[in-house]
Image 1: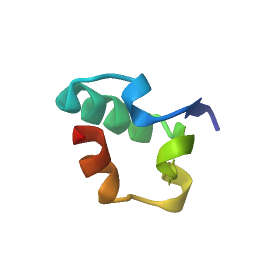
Image 2: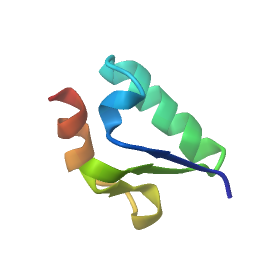
Image 3: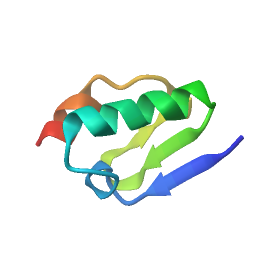
Length: 56
């Protein structure tokens, strides 16, 4: 399984829609996505708060 590890979600983009599409693409290709400072790991399932953190 491929894994993308970043410091926080803001590092992959500023546009909320584009970031959402990228996360969907990761999901389609079974890519694990980890944002360390945001405590986001897609292996743990969907986190509704990740949407709000991405907006802020």
